[in-house]
Amino acid sequence: MFNNSWDLILQDEMKKSYFKHIKEFIKEERLIKTIYPSANDLFNAFKLTDFKDIKVVILGQDPYHGEKEAMGLSFSVRRGVRTPPSLRNIFKELKDDLNITRTDTDLSDWAKQGVFLLNTVLTVEKDKANSHKEIGWEIFTDYVISQIDEKLDNVVFILWGRQARDKKKIMSNKNNYIIESAHPSPLSAYHGFFGSKPFSKTNNYLEEHNKKKINW
Image 1: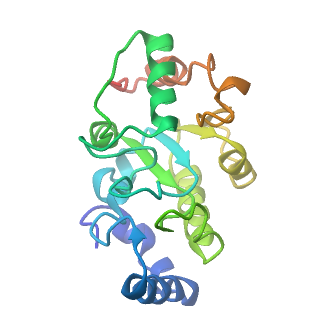
Image 2: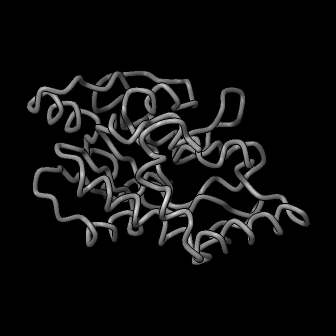
């Protein structure tokens, strides 16, 4: 399905009844509603970052629900689309942390360097945040997170916001590194996200463990 090592990791999980329910639900919803991201973009995180290449996991909540925004990578939007407030704040922290000025909103280059950009819920109805919460995606993404944590070492998990931080309970590998803070959204960025320095912390950790740093 993804033409990489995710196929082996996920083949049995995607045959389970809950996953079949998700697929059927999304298929029916697409017939009568606008659902983001598109079917082609839905699994971009898995297509662009092979399981065995993961160095960093940035965990988001659910996809952007505005027109043309969601592209299957957490926090990322394609070039030419208005920059969402959360991503603006991520870029502001990047500038403050590493003095990098980034304007490219498409984070595919991060994904190709081993930054797995995963949302805990993979679809959303247009203009309705959290509308696909609890249709089953959380079971799937919990499995994905647990597989990364169990099978890979020296991975940096970046957990922004309460929903992402809740995932610590399924992580037990002491050889991985967790960075957590408030969410970058305007509602919470000033309550611990700004000044948290996730980008320099990540690169310092990767360097210490003989891994190539991320070119943010």
